[in-house]
Image 1: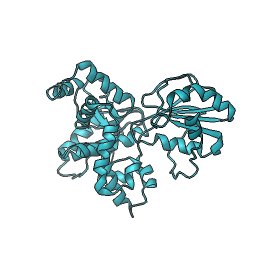
Image 2: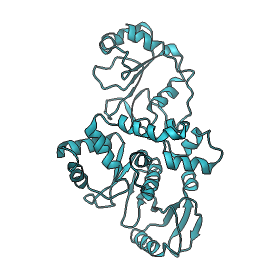
Image 3: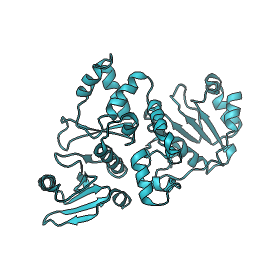
Image 4: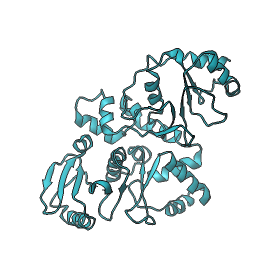
Length: 355
């Protein structure tokens, strides 16, 4: 039982972590999420309420662990040591779960099991990012770093010249093979674009040999693991969806092509998914929150006079859908526009994200 004994010696009491808004509250929980979003640290937080000898932590990605030995002796080991919490990290359900009071599982793909709660963890929102960030002296510096390098806690204290390289490694971690990597890459390259999967498949097919089934199956995998999001047009399920990725800075890590507006919009979308389920897009409105009758429009560098025509189209579209509030999210502009029917706010991102 060498592997089990080694796992039983693991002690997380000295691990430093900052609490997230999301927590494990159910004794039987399955955690999924994209690479480096904080699944393990959520587990460490949960384990901090127990004594080290009360839990057994097994990471199946640790090459030192003998899978056969663990599967054959796990139940006996739990009983023998009166373990009350079993953690199975990077588990792919190769064997039947033993009996234990608390079982916490982290896995790549979501799976439904009776009596288990499913948690899907996302990367940090801006408010959580500020709690993790002790490098920058003010909110402007923190925002600039968040905008440039994204929402993964691990990167906050990385040396700046190493951050792009680490982002590239995380993108590769998310992919099982070269085919998955190329599919993930073309999705990232098209964030905040209205592109059909068929269009992207045809583009990719000119660069590599790939079947349509494999392409669609991989896109579904990325969607299920919340690595990629496909945003529907309101009341038009068959319309082309917009594409977003779980870290807005990935585009900057894989391409020298600058698409600042796309990255900025992706960043705003990721803030919205923490708060709302009913997010759609409309013709001139990037994000429509139906339950709140709110429109969110990212315009990084807003100029009221230069944007006059665009603003008229946004207002016209908002009136058609009985929207009562438009929030135009900017880098630093802050003003209100008077309108007889609508509340129109021009708000800097950091102020909006923290409101």
